[in-house]
Image 1 (spheres, rainbow, N blue to C red):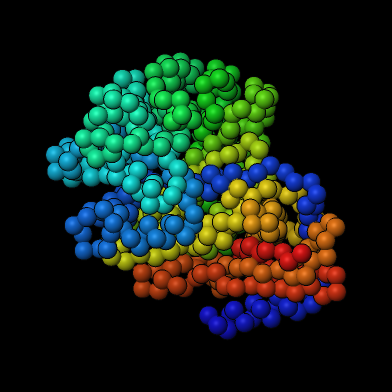
Image 2 (cartoon, rainbow, N blue to C red):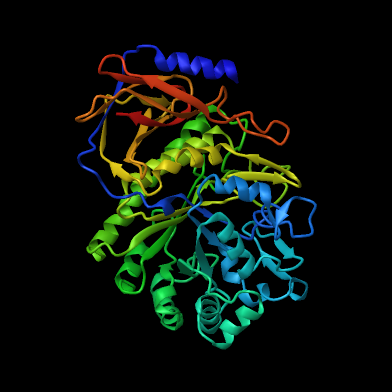
Length: 513
């Protein structure tokens, strides 16, 4: 590791000819990048919650009131701003009353997961109170998803009142009996999930009417009323966004959309997690870059129906989805490699670019499911390359985006596919520093980048770089630090700052002005 870091440092300080130029104009700040763009998603699926995060207070694994200390500690390092819970498809089979009161008296919960496998939770150990305990530990906001599919208006109304009421209502008293006198802070509340599919196979017009009915009865004190989010469409289908932005304009602050990255573009044979060829490397990155056009398509609809820009596009499920591994320990458990870190970073740049209309995203998911931050196996825990990407981008939370232009960008081509060689994003962070994020998509060739900031003579740059020798570099329980960020710095030569970005790398640096 030391030799590789030294090699990177030598590359960084050597004078080079810059093939790519990035011009940043700090005098023309753009929209603030809402911290909730870096939101997380925790669904009751596989070992995403149970074992992955929750082991119970009697476990030998060190925990605080049932939540794993190692996992909570690692997540706190990401400054997690928001957690979506309890689903996902699970939300529309979840009945909140099953998850309150003494844990030994709670009923079992039986549900069918995304792969059609019936799962039985011995008890509903993690319910409303436990979730908000986690939220408090993380210092995050709560995004709670309600049950439209198998629930009722009364059930959802009661849950919102149970969580938010600060009076002496029967539900507030019940909450107090269960150990919480003060109301919970529900920052966002989603009415259903994927109503076009697992949430009920509905048409958007029908759901718009249901939403209006549900929302009408979701009473909460004005000071603690959650912001309401409507469950929108999937992928490039803008029909739901069109209908909902017309019908629910005054009743919602956001419409969700879900978009996953599948290497092959074929849901029947999605692609490998590890051991993939370069063809699946470039196809994965090419498919994830389609997020930009997806956002543009949905934003065009919102701009037409909501010119006042009151409604945000909430991408509350995104990330990579691969073929299930033969030895997968639970549903939708998949390994996570350097490729996933690049996927995350490329999406961050897209979300930054559309910060005015994209105030929230939640990656799927936090632990042990799909593109996870953390993997666990009993008492063991490992941080993934995606975790490190989120960690490196913490300065972009609530930062002010800055316009940049990439000149003479390289191209990365393989077969019929060509994608930009360099992706970049710049912002002025809350600490006053100017941050630049760079991705080199080419798995074989480093790239030299000249950085210019209008009106400023840069002195250098310092930060972190994440790369590895192989495209599928990943951490395991046996070798948990096979891939992690390395320190990076570069000094200006004269009035020129040049940064050499290694092949297949994610880099975030603070520019020294």
